[in-house]
Image (cartoon, rainbow, N blue to C red):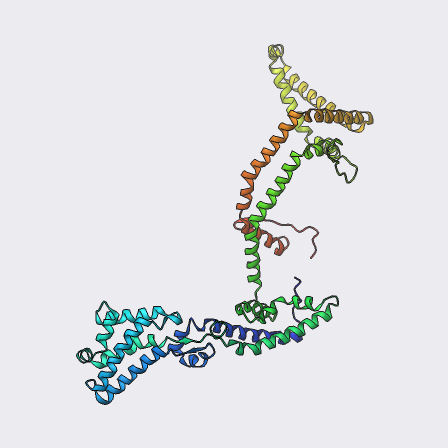
Length: 485
């Protein structure tokens, strides 16, 4: 997708305003998603939030646990007014003991997914009373004898600190006719969605007018990420358009993040792509060899499937001609001193191994004559050989004879290769050789450090002219030659 240009300065404030609105909406979305898991935290530290937001999520106090806490409050009032030994206090204690047993049996915490909270309550009460049974522990705790012996104030403070907050976290959440929990967040989200829809409509209209060939669908898809702001589900995906808007409004620089994402995506696919591409190329070559196309290309015989020639030139012969001319006119003159030295060395060695010359070594001046003779002979041989090569290349008759020789050699080689046994053996060896390459080297390609390769590629794009590139301890010097930005 082609990215739109950065906003011009007069409209930058509009981009920033919409980015801020989108960020606020994303914050509300994340709060809504986290509210139920974090409700216990809000209840302990910010109870005002729970009083406001519980109705939006369809949360209300659970009747059973709420009745339990109300009974505890009635017990406290009875003790404060008539004392712990009064009949009214005894009645409330018996009621609390019964309610404790029902709470353990019925587990009113299960509907809210808070069964672990009930287990925590039971464990704390067992530890307090040193009992194996939680029911027995509650029965002892809510008794006049225990409270009188251990002190009403101390035990009641223990309940308020360790048990009451856990019971208070339980709740009942309403279920709608669709079978899902009630969630009225859409009431809060609707004004934002309307703003985003209007913004997308204006932007699409502007894009459609700017690019006359665009349809409304093209214009809307130009800013496809804004469609995520309109979805009534998967609202967490709004993080994508929010980040894009913050980047376009120049409130957040996401260039490093984009580069890292690109690096991760390319790296994750590079290994598989490398193996797939190389293996497919090798398989294609193997198939061509089995079908005889490789020999056809090498010999260009018309007896096989027609060969597609794009320039009416035998590329093998043309390449061979260029290489021969380059060797004769450019390479050989430069290496002539080394060739003469090698020939001289071999001539001197041959002379030294000759018995006749060996017996004449004692004659005065013969050694010097031997050196001069070997130098002249080596130079003469080299010159004659080079002149013969030049003559063969430049002489039309010699060139024609050389061409006939090459053609005859090619025909003879082709005739021998086309013999069933030789051709079959060559094809089998080539196919096996490519299979060995696949097994031994393709895996190494996929195991290469692609992050290092991508880092080198990135530096090649961003290097300063005449500045060395340093990649993990190695220096790669790049020279700028006729490159213009």
